Image (tube, rainbow, N blue to C red; front, side, top):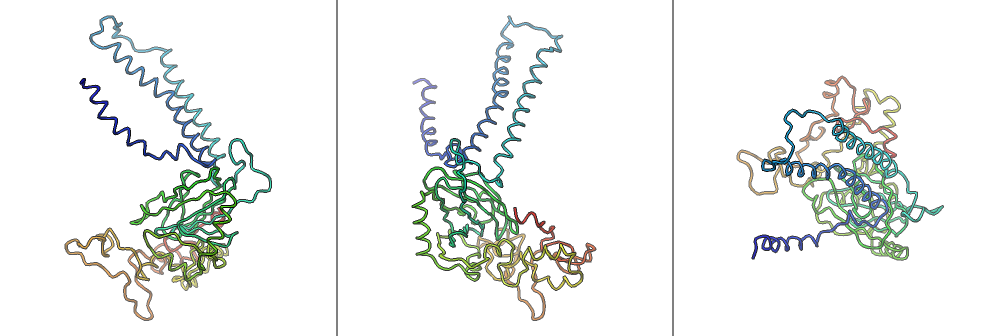
Length: 405
């Protein structure tokens, strides 16, 4: 058997493995994702207009001017060709201009903050259609979805009716994350103390994968959920099921839910305490913490002056898991001093207590840097967190306009 045929037979099973690949990005079921797919294809096609000729002419020149071709013209003094220079520079210039125009147009038309103007390429958005509002919270390591108009909430399960605009409001109660349903639309970041938005629509009924697209710790790879695209009757039945089988989501039950956990099952909540999503967004779901909008109001009024030191404990957010003793085991034992996932400890390393003992009348110690104490403020020449517009991480306060985005 010829070697070429044998080589082809060996490669055939590998091509068979590719048949199991999910090409959801190239075969989406939502209009926004379909337009993003078209943008990818158009951009790739424009770039191939210059890449393919370059590769073809490179191979052609290598073959034509090979050492064994004695008929090829040999001109060692050649150094310039106006026609060739025009071709070399004009073709990439046209491609760059076309890509720039395409990028400019798509940046505005596919802005995730921009409300939808159509259901798909053939159907404009009907007048008077009310979008389905879904408030998304990224937790460690699960997703919490609020449906304010229906008065329900779910964990790791999302549903929406087909051909109804969806207005997502997205935030995080922990580290930065990214909300991504490939069949619906592109990924949108979720950040603590801030709200991002996404407008999308699902055009085909089905069950689709949703995931976290930004590494956020040990449970990142299992931070997935199912997105159900249903007809209106199916969506109404799903809402009724959540109300029938769910429990009440209060402030206290949310605090328990917020604790880090992996492989979290689907949960239903038939009712939600008023203002809970707003408290999560403003980082004050934990009793006693100052809300971000309250802090921004103090900043807008000129700060609290020297009295701002009294707000120190209300502005500390980062170490709440450590203080509660529920922090996930640290993988980087050398950096944190805490127990690692492995029972083996580096030589000379003693794990620290996750929740250090607090003496009566004293503030708790933290393993991280303290950016809110008087020493830090004096070092920076600033009065304090509420006076200088800094949060407990030392970063600038979120501007009022940002909180509404």
